[in-house]
Amino acid sequence: MKVTGYRSLVTSHDWGRPVGDVNGVVASGVTDVPILILETDGGLEGVGLGQHADIARVFGAVEGQDPRAAPALYDSMLSHVFKSGHAGLTYGAVAAIDMALWDLKAKMADEPLWRTLGAADRFVRGYASGLCYGLDDDGFAALYARFAERGFSAAKIKGGRDLARDIRRLKHVRTIMAGNSVAPALMLDVNESWNCKQAVRHLAEIEAAGIDLTWIEEPVRRWDTHGLAAVSRAARCAVATGENLTGLEQFAPLLDARAVDVVQAGSVWGITHFQRVAIAAHVR
Image (cartoon, one colour):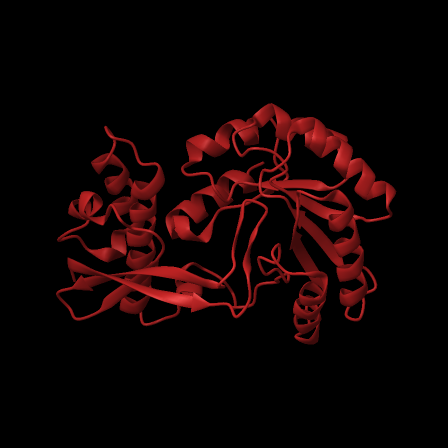
């Protein structure tokens, strides 16, 4: 079976409420979902999600190829755009194709992707989180109460601009999740909105307020190796980051400097990327 073509679609996700983080809120609650469909000469189609505006630049690396070679084709795509770089929209296209190739690989094996990837079952522990920055206090409480009703015992909230508000909401969500656990896991995601000194000071205040964070997510800019390492040394909680990094070369400095405790790989960057980042984290 060979890859022969592609189709690009855009659908929308209506969240039914404002969604966003400290960097911006979509008041309408409607966000675009770009979808890539890879076509084959055998009739199967592979689906990939994520921005792929540069698909025409990248597709030549996989056209006519067997989708079962997904990891090798991932490297072929990176080589194909090597001179002009693979960041931004180009990396999004690489990732969407990669995701669709893995979808085809699983379909050709007539099994779900989690089994193709070697998992024993389809269960993954999750925490509740919902781009909640733009909600007022009542809306925030109602959202996490619904999550708790579904059995969640851990929550990650969005914050970063107003520390008093963040502390109040962390305490509130802890109370909500306490119905499912005597020790709910709490995470705070500030989406790179602090500098290093702010992060150290704010985390000390959060700890002084009696809140035991599981992790602080993206406390400083994603590329600030020294800042992330300083925050990790100063705080009791773990430092999580990486969802916006593209390529192992961007993770390496953070891993080498012990600047990240929870290594995150954004789902929209593809399956091969996720596997390689996971292995790099595992060996450390």
